[in-house]
Length: 224
Image (cartoon, rainbow, N blue to C red; front, side):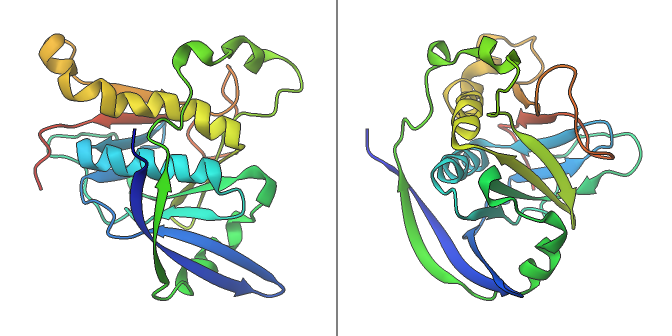
C-alpha cells in the first residue's frame, strides 16, 4: 500500500538554552474535537478527523525528537453531546517520553511558533501492528516501560510514550477507519463506535486532576 501523506508545518522554538522541534498539523480538520469532561477525556472524530489523527499518531511514533501538535481546541463537539458540568476544550500534543518535555513550558512555546515551514510527511499505511501481534500480558510485568502517560497543561492534553506505545495503541485507533464507518450498519442497536485509550495498567494511575482514560467516539453524521 502507498504511504499516507500528511501536510504539516515544522517549527523550531528556542526557550532559554533549549530548542524544541514542533510538528504542527496544517489545517487540522474541523470535525476532530477533544474535551476534558472531569471524569474522562472525550474525543470526537468523523472519518476525515479520524484519518488525520491516525496519520499524526503514526508520525509521533516515528518522531522521537519532536512534539506533534494538533490545534483543535476551538473545534466544537458534535450536536447532541451532553456532559456533567462545564467541559474544557483541549488541544493535543503527542510526545516521545525520551524528550522528558516540561509541559509547564508549553504555553510559552506555543506563543512563539510563528508561521513555520511547510512540509509533507509520509508514513507507511500499515505502520501499526496487527492485534494478534501485540502481547498484552507483558504490559502487566514489573519493569515494563511502554505505557502511555497523560498530562494536561495550558488547555492541552499531552500523550507521552515510547514508539512502541504509540504503535500498539495506534492499532486501536486504526479501528476508527477500518471498522467505524460500517459499524452501525452492521450493529444498528450498538449506539456508537468508540475506542478507549488508558495510561498504564489497571488500576489506572495518572497525575492529579488528569482523567484516567481517553474515550474516542466516531461520529459519521457530524454537523457543524
